[in-house]
Length: 388
Image 1 (tube, rainbow, N blue to C red):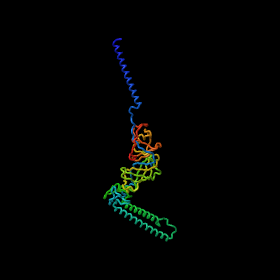
Image 2: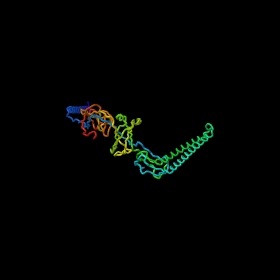
Image 3: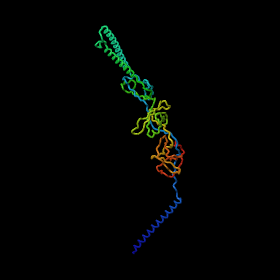
Image 4: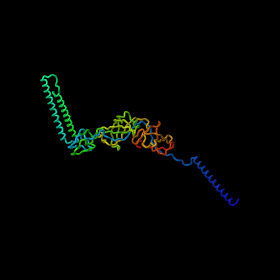
């Protein structure tokens, strides 16, 4: 063996001995580390702290909440039924002004229509006079026929003037109908409010000429306003029967006013797109309230439904996007159950109790990182459900 070969073998042995020493050192260190964990001497990670809402199931009346627009039950666009010059426009015919039923709003110059009526009455008088004359001549013709001693009746009805009388009677009826129409046209020169309401729009001004059929003003009735509220199938099942007659409360979004309403009709079909039903509610004397309810307003509708047992009242935010509610069991570990709200109220939701229990500790702010069975340290939220 040469000197170079001996040196290479010596180097290889030194490297192998060094690697063996390092391996033994690592094994000894792992042994000490494992022993330390087994004895509990190492640091342990503390349980996560979670805020819980303590609650229990009780009986709650279901409530359906939705938004709806207030609309007048009746809206009328007044149109001229005769043409002419506007001789008078009421001072009350202004947008936003209130008008009474039958109140005179616009007068069209009556002169030509008065003349039209006078002419029609004249024609009627002459037609009636002609009828009287024909009847008198008929009487004379019958007396003459009897005096002649001829047997039977004349061969022609014209002798006794029967057809002439019939023609005169038709002329009277025609003239009387023309007179009645002329009176109606004269009435049309005065445009009155069809009901008590608000002036929504005015389309004419004093001194203008107007044609038959032109719009004069738009009036909305104020005796009753209506709302159309759409409800889902779940909400529909929560309503108490019969639905018609159910009372409702209307609340302005800003909380500036409250009004009472009542369900008066139920839509006869389900919307093909939204799959929702429509409830029609009515508000009587909406302007008589301390805070008037104006058409076009959006309000929040609150409808009470059936009373439900074993319902949990919870603050908003406890329901995850996946439809789970997390809670802490008696061993201070995380559990969850799947649910969907029976109904909601502002800031609150109501779910069915998944199983009967004396009390629940619901996690107030669930996290995506939660794991079933994870140990936690619960801290009670001292706020009430309404406050939270």
